[in-house]
Figure 1 (cartoon, rainbow, N blue to C red):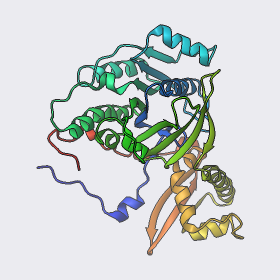
Figure 2: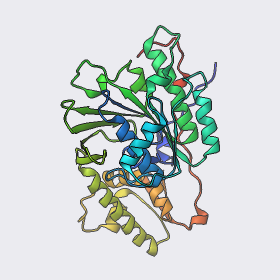
Figure 3: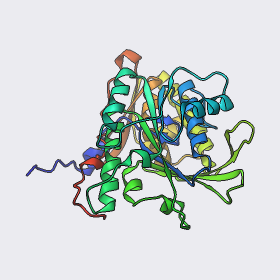
Length: 353
């Protein structure tokens, strides 16, 4: 028996962890993700365009991307078809986007093949597997949930260990459901093991308008209304249900500016959120509350750190303090990484919760 490793709530709140890193800002963090949709709905066009955006460091719609190399396992296509699609999307495809049309299945060599590629191409940030069914293999366990959860868990563990994003292209059931997430083919073990799930839906097969439903552990639930371009084959963003994201970005930019000005006068300061707000926004014109201000600071620890503002938290005399310090890049300490959940470690005999 191994003793449980525990931490009390107060100590946990006082720890500073490295924030989640995003491949596509607000949409795709490092980890394992599923993009599901009906056959021939345009999933592969969307995935290929995503790969081009990441490999070139171009934004995906209004969302910034972290540039890096990309591996696309296009297991239902030929190189000729991929070439045709590339020319439909761009005349200048980058050498940092790599394709393969054959791969082993899970538990029979796929993980090792991806590992080898990542070793040879350490700048890789994204791996797309199109489709999941091609690499899924056949589980020995009669429990479908356990089979799905364990198989996908192998890829999640790989993504977490290598700090990359893996996107699985998958299909939907034919049976309609009011919740799009319930239409993903297979058991709920798939979405249970994934960090994020995206479902692409059209009102009819001939329609050019679709909804991309997004949900996940590290992203806000949102629905993106998209339109497929018949000529350029690019999904264009028409509407984002989460309209408050722009306001949030502006607010954080304001906070960075005001904190930078404050730390020009005092190189180090520790104070409750309310007292800090009174210093940087005494008139209350920004409309922040102490709680929302503290939440924004916690979400932006890494961004502030990159701009020379070191943030930590501690408790003193019953009050929780936000500690700010102006530092040079050379003085920046490392922060603790968050240990990822490992679904691959679940026993194959464990039944669905």
